[in-house]
Image 1 (cartoon, rainbow, N blue to C red):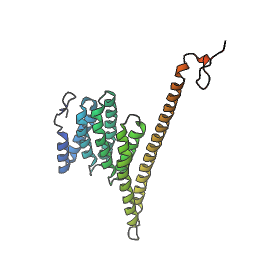
Image 2 (cartoon, helix red, strand yellow):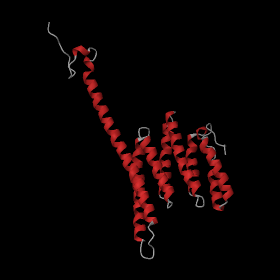
Image 3 (cartoon, rainbow, N blue to C red):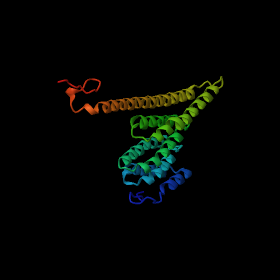
Length: 243
Protein backbone atom coordinates (compact mmCIF):
# COMPACT_ATOMS: atom_id res chain seq x y z
CA UNK A 1 0.00 0.00 0.00
CA UNK A 2 2.94 2.31 0.34
CA UNK A 3 3.25 3.06 -3.35
CA UNK A 4 2.60 6.76 -2.80
CA UNK A 5 5.32 9.09 -1.61
CA UNK A 6 5.71 12.64 -0.37
CA UNK A 7 8.09 13.13 -3.28
CA UNK A 8 5.61 12.05 -5.93
CA UNK A 9 2.43 14.05 -6.36
CA UNK A 10 0.63 12.13 -9.08
CA UNK A 11 1.22 8.52 -8.13
CA UNK A 12 -1.77 6.34 -8.95
CA UNK A 13 -3.81 5.61 -5.83
CA UNK A 14 -4.92 2.01 -6.43
CA UNK A 15 -6.62 1.14 -3.08
CA UNK A 16 -9.80 3.05 -4.01
CA UNK A 17 -10.71 0.85 -6.98
CA UNK A 18 -9.47 -2.25 -5.18
CA UNK A 19 -11.57 -1.56 -2.06
CA UNK A 20 -14.67 -0.96 -4.17
CA UNK A 21 -14.10 -4.29 -5.90
CA UNK A 22 -13.79 -6.02 -2.53
CA UNK A 23 -17.12 -4.60 -1.34
CA UNK A 24 -18.81 -5.45 -4.62
CA UNK A 25 -17.89 -9.10 -4.08
CA UNK A 26 -18.74 -8.89 -0.37
CA UNK A 27 -15.70 -10.90 0.72
CA UNK A 28 -15.59 -10.47 4.51
CA UNK A 29 -12.03 -11.71 5.02
CA UNK A 30 -10.68 -9.41 2.36
CA UNK A 31 -12.71 -6.52 3.77
CA UNK A 32 -11.01 -6.96 7.14
CA UNK A 33 -7.58 -7.20 5.51
CA UNK A 34 -8.28 -4.12 3.40
CA UNK A 35 -9.39 -2.25 6.52
CA UNK A 36 -6.13 -3.10 8.27
CA UNK A 37 -4.30 -1.61 5.29
CA UNK A 38 -6.46 1.51 5.61
CA UNK A 39 -5.45 1.78 9.28
CA UNK A 40 -1.80 1.66 8.19
CA UNK A 41 -2.41 4.41 5.64
CA UNK A 42 -3.96 6.65 8.28
CA UNK A 43 -1.18 5.81 10.75
CA UNK A 44 1.50 6.94 8.28
CA UNK A 45 -0.51 9.76 6.79
CA UNK A 46 2.28 12.29 7.36
CA UNK A 47 4.47 10.38 4.91
CA UNK A 48 2.22 11.05 1.93
CA UNK A 49 1.83 14.11 -0.23
CA UNK A 50 -1.12 16.41 0.36
CA UNK A 51 -2.36 15.69 -3.18
CA UNK A 52 -3.19 12.10 -2.14
CA UNK A 53 -5.38 13.18 0.79
CA UNK A 54 -8.39 13.46 -1.55
CA UNK A 55 -7.98 9.86 -2.66
CA UNK A 56 -7.66 8.73 0.94
CA UNK A 57 -10.96 10.45 1.77
CA UNK A 58 -12.63 8.59 -1.10
CA UNK A 59 -11.22 5.34 0.21
CA UNK A 60 -12.48 6.05 3.73
CA UNK A 61 -15.95 6.76 2.35
CA UNK A 62 -15.95 3.30 0.75
CA UNK A 63 -15.35 1.68 4.13
CA UNK A 64 -17.94 3.87 5.84
CA UNK A 65 -20.46 2.49 3.36
CA UNK A 66 -19.86 -1.07 4.58
CA UNK A 67 -23.33 -2.52 5.18
CA UNK A 68 -22.27 -5.75 6.85
CA UNK A 69 -19.87 -4.33 9.42
CA UNK A 70 -20.99 -1.28 11.40
CA UNK A 71 -17.84 -1.39 13.55
CA UNK A 72 -15.62 -0.81 10.51
CA UNK A 73 -17.94 1.98 9.37
CA UNK A 74 -17.79 3.80 12.71
CA UNK A 75 -13.99 3.55 12.98
CA UNK A 76 -13.68 4.79 9.39
CA UNK A 77 -15.70 7.90 10.28
CA UNK A 78 -13.18 8.65 13.04
CA UNK A 79 -10.39 8.47 10.46
CA UNK A 80 -11.74 11.70 8.96
CA UNK A 81 -10.70 13.40 12.21
CA UNK A 82 -7.17 12.08 11.65
CA UNK A 83 -7.15 13.63 8.18
CA UNK A 84 -8.31 16.98 9.57
CA UNK A 85 -5.38 16.94 12.04
CA UNK A 86 -3.07 16.14 9.13
CA UNK A 87 -4.43 19.11 7.17
CA UNK A 88 -3.83 21.46 10.11
CA UNK A 89 -0.26 20.19 10.36
CA UNK A 90 0.23 20.80 6.64
CA UNK A 91 -1.07 24.35 7.03
CA UNK A 92 1.66 25.05 9.54
CA UNK A 93 4.18 24.00 6.88
CA UNK A 94 2.93 26.82 4.63
CA UNK A 95 1.12 24.53 2.23
CA UNK A 96 -2.12 26.43 2.77
CA UNK A 97 -3.12 26.73 -0.91
CA UNK A 98 -3.02 22.97 -1.42
CA UNK A 99 -4.70 22.30 1.91
CA UNK A 100 -7.59 24.66 1.12
CA UNK A 101 -8.42 22.49 -1.90
CA UNK A 102 -8.86 19.44 0.36
CA UNK A 103 -11.04 21.01 3.08
CA UNK A 104 -14.23 21.18 0.94
CA UNK A 105 -13.92 17.48 0.08
CA UNK A 106 -13.44 16.59 3.74
CA UNK A 107 -16.62 18.38 4.78
CA UNK A 108 -18.46 17.02 1.73
CA UNK A 109 -17.48 13.55 2.94
CA UNK A 110 -18.85 14.33 6.39
CA UNK A 111 -21.99 15.72 4.77
CA UNK A 112 -22.48 12.46 2.84
CA UNK A 113 -21.91 10.44 6.00
CA UNK A 114 -24.34 12.71 7.85
CA UNK A 115 -27.12 11.66 5.49
CA UNK A 116 -26.69 8.00 6.41
CA UNK A 117 -29.75 6.06 7.58
CA UNK A 118 -27.56 4.41 10.22
CA UNK A 119 -28.08 6.48 13.37
CA UNK A 120 -24.71 5.94 15.04
CA UNK A 121 -22.78 6.68 11.85
CA UNK A 122 -24.54 9.97 11.08
CA UNK A 123 -24.36 11.06 14.74
CA UNK A 124 -20.63 10.40 14.70
CA UNK A 125 -20.23 12.66 11.66
CA UNK A 126 -22.14 15.48 13.42
CA UNK A 127 -19.83 15.24 16.44
CA UNK A 128 -16.74 15.32 14.24
CA UNK A 129 -17.97 18.43 12.39
CA UNK A 130 -18.47 20.18 15.73
CA UNK A 131 -15.09 19.01 17.01
CA UNK A 132 -13.15 20.17 13.94
CA UNK A 133 -14.83 23.56 13.60
CA UNK A 134 -15.25 24.46 17.28
CA UNK A 135 -11.81 23.41 18.46
CA UNK A 136 -9.84 24.77 15.49
CA UNK A 137 -11.97 27.75 14.52
CA UNK A 138 -9.02 30.15 14.28
CA UNK A 139 -7.09 27.78 12.03
CA UNK A 140 -9.81 27.09 9.47
CA UNK A 141 -10.03 29.27 6.33
CA UNK A 142 -12.95 31.73 6.45
CA UNK A 143 -14.53 30.38 3.26
CA UNK A 144 -14.56 26.85 4.73
CA UNK A 145 -16.26 28.05 7.92
CA UNK A 146 -18.87 29.82 5.81
CA UNK A 147 -19.40 26.66 3.74
CA UNK A 148 -19.92 24.50 6.84
CA UNK A 149 -22.30 26.93 8.59
CA UNK A 150 -24.44 27.43 5.47
CA UNK A 151 -24.42 24.68 2.83
CA UNK A 152 -23.41 21.72 5.01
CA UNK A 153 -25.58 22.75 7.97
CA UNK A 154 -28.64 23.38 5.77
CA UNK A 155 -28.31 20.03 3.99
CA UNK A 156 -27.99 18.07 7.22
CA UNK A 157 -30.79 19.92 9.03
CA UNK A 158 -33.16 19.37 6.10
CA UNK A 159 -32.24 15.68 6.02
CA UNK A 160 -32.80 14.92 9.71
CA UNK A 161 -35.97 17.00 10.01
CA UNK A 162 -37.48 15.44 6.89
CA UNK A 163 -36.78 11.89 8.08
CA UNK A 164 -37.96 12.71 11.61
CA UNK A 165 -41.30 13.90 10.23
CA UNK A 166 -41.51 10.80 8.04
CA UNK A 167 -40.86 8.54 11.03
CA UNK A 168 -43.58 10.27 13.07
CA UNK A 169 -46.11 9.90 10.24
CA UNK A 170 -45.39 6.18 10.01
CA UNK A 171 -46.56 5.60 13.60
CA UNK A 172 -50.03 4.06 13.76
CA UNK A 173 -51.86 1.17 15.38
CA UNK A 174 -50.15 -1.32 13.09
CA UNK A 175 -46.73 0.22 13.74
CA UNK A 176 -46.59 1.57 17.33
CA UNK A 177 -42.78 1.31 17.60
CA UNK A 178 -41.23 4.67 18.56
CA UNK A 179 -37.61 3.50 18.35
CA UNK A 180 -37.00 5.06 14.93
CA UNK A 181 -38.54 8.36 16.02
CA UNK A 182 -36.27 8.47 19.07
CA UNK A 183 -33.26 7.75 16.85
CA UNK A 184 -34.03 10.76 14.65
CA UNK A 185 -34.75 12.92 17.71
CA UNK A 186 -31.30 12.04 19.03
CA UNK A 187 -29.70 13.00 15.71
CA UNK A 188 -31.51 16.35 15.68
CA UNK A 189 -30.33 17.13 19.22
CA UNK A 190 -26.70 16.23 18.44
CA UNK A 191 -26.69 18.24 15.20
CA UNK A 192 -28.37 21.29 16.75
CA UNK A 193 -26.07 21.23 19.77
CA UNK A 194 -23.06 21.15 17.47
CA UNK A 195 -24.31 24.03 15.32
CA UNK A 196 -25.14 26.11 18.40
CA UNK A 197 -21.65 25.44 19.78
CA UNK A 198 -20.05 26.53 16.49
CA UNK A 199 -22.22 29.68 16.37
CA UNK A 200 -21.32 30.61 19.94
CA UNK A 201 -17.61 30.16 19.22
CA UNK A 202 -17.94 32.31 16.10
CA UNK A 203 -19.71 35.07 18.04
CA UNK A 204 -17.08 34.91 20.80
CA UNK A 205 -14.27 35.12 18.24
CA UNK A 206 -15.94 38.09 16.54
CA UNK A 207 -16.27 39.86 19.89
CA UNK A 208 -12.60 39.24 20.67
CA UNK A 209 -11.63 40.64 17.27
CA UNK A 210 -13.70 43.77 17.89
CA UNK A 211 -12.11 44.25 21.31
CA UNK A 212 -8.64 43.79 19.87
CA UNK A 213 -9.44 46.31 17.17
CA UNK A 214 -10.58 48.81 19.82
CA UNK A 215 -7.45 48.21 21.88
CA UNK A 216 -5.28 48.76 18.85
CA UNK A 217 -7.04 52.05 18.20
CA UNK A 218 -6.38 53.23 21.76
CA UNK A 219 -2.71 52.29 21.54
CA UNK A 220 -2.36 54.27 18.37
CA UNK A 221 -4.02 57.22 20.07
CA UNK A 222 -1.54 57.26 22.96
CA UNK A 223 1.57 56.19 21.09
CA UNK A 224 2.86 59.74 20.55
CA UNK A 225 3.18 60.25 24.31
CA UNK A 226 3.85 56.70 25.43
CA UNK A 227 7.58 57.21 25.88
CA UNK A 228 7.09 59.34 28.97
CA UNK A 229 4.39 57.82 31.19
CA UNK A 230 4.64 60.57 33.83
CA UNK A 231 3.74 63.23 31.29
CA UNK A 232 0.59 61.50 29.96
CA UNK A 233 -2.90 61.72 31.45
CA UNK A 234 -5.59 58.98 31.29
CA UNK A 235 -6.90 60.36 28.02
CA UNK A 236 -3.55 59.94 26.32
CA UNK A 237 -2.84 63.66 26.18
CA UNK A 238 0.60 64.97 26.90
CA UNK A 239 0.84 67.07 30.07
CA UNK A 240 2.76 70.26 29.54
CA UNK A 241 4.17 71.74 32.72
CA UNK A 242 4.47 75.50 32.92
CA UNK A 243 7.76 76.87 34.18
